[in-house]
Image (cartoon, rainbow, N blue to C red; front, side, top):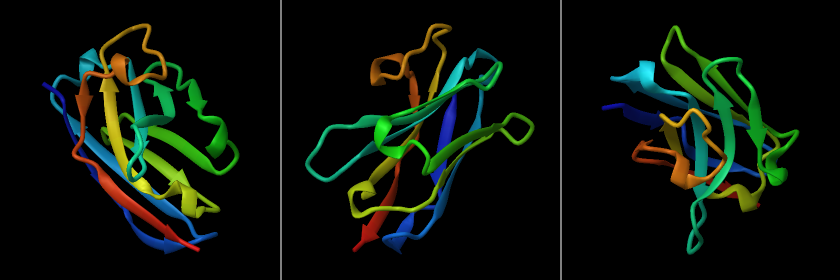
Length: 124
C-alpha cells in the first residue's frame, strides 16, 4: 500500500509562486508514474502533470505549460510541483497520485493511490 502526503498549499496573489510537495512511502517498487491532479470548486478533478518513474518523461495539461514543473526525487521519495505565474483559475484542491500501471495515461482511472489533497487559492 502506497501512502501519499501533500504539503505546500496556501493563499497567494496572482503572479506569485508556490511549490507543492508529495511524500510517498510503502510499495514504491510498484510505481510506474506519479501525477498531480486538481479539482476546482464545483468542477471535476483533472490532471495537471505526470512524470514517469523511469526516464522522467513528463506531461502537462495545456493550461499550465510553461508555468508549472513536475519533478521527482526518488532518493527522497518525493514528487514536487513548482507553480509559477499563478492565476486565479489555478485555484483548486491539488492531489498527488501514484500509478502501478506500466502504461499509465494522464487520466484518473490510471492512478491507484491518492493523497488527501492540499488547497491552493490564488487571489486576483
